[in-house]
Image 1: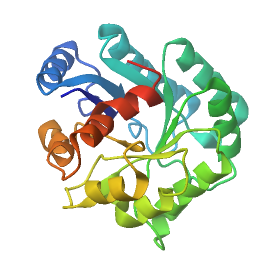
Image 2 (image 1 turned 180 degrees about the vertical axis):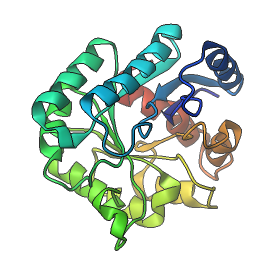
Image 3 (image 1 turned 90 degrees about the vertical axis):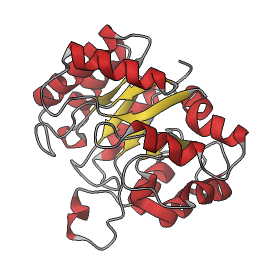
Image 4 (image 1 turned 45 degrees about the horizontal axis):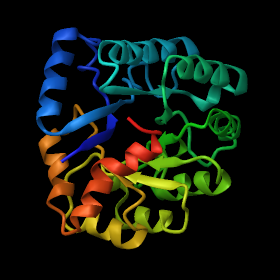
Amino acid sequence: MRIIDIHTHPVFFGDGAQREQVDKLVRYARSLGIERMVALGDVLYHGPTPTPEQMAEINDTTHQLMQWYPHFFIGFCGLNPLWGEPPVRAELERCVAHGFRGIKLEISNNARDRVMKPLMKAAEDFGVPVLQHTWDTKGKAMRQQHSDSSDTALLARRHPNVKVIMAHLYGIGVRGILEAKHLPNLYIDTSSCLPVAGLVECAIEQLGDDRLLYGSDLPIRELGQCIGRVSGAAISEAAKHKVLFQNACELLGGI
């Protein structure tokens, strides 16, 4: 069983990337069949709206992981769309030069906000996917910063040339799956929250097996349990291989 984990935060709770802890994590992950981890950084370390300098510090920590294990960690560049075009593009360019392969967006703003346009243009220009934190927040006050599945779906609809990953299958549920159904550039990762019986099966039934990506949300979730949500699902072995490995491999341009 080959696995790529598309959604991890190997940050060790603010202690930085301690080499001994990283070594232990990599050994354990590999024992489970995980060949690559996408490291998204400790994106909330400086709060929901980090400055360019603060986010550069977070991205530098991700780069350190990539240097220690260049054949295991793949970096996604944390960005804050509220900075505006020049700082966003500059930090993305810096990260791509270091080998980063995507963008991670947290809760600086809602995905439907117009400030997203320069960032998405930069993503298209550099040819990298955008992973957007998404949760069921319809009608809730926190939606000013948290993106609902309908918001992330609108983002993908507005930018059909950018591949968008809607994070947290278990936070968006069936409604999130249906929001993504007719958007071929919109993927969903399986990360976070407690497992719900039948949700992976529902995603495969509605989306097909090409747009679901395995993710754990490490360190707040246990890897074995997260893998089991897919490996134990009532879907074909071919579909399991796609979700656990092949879809991410193709999205990332190989491993």
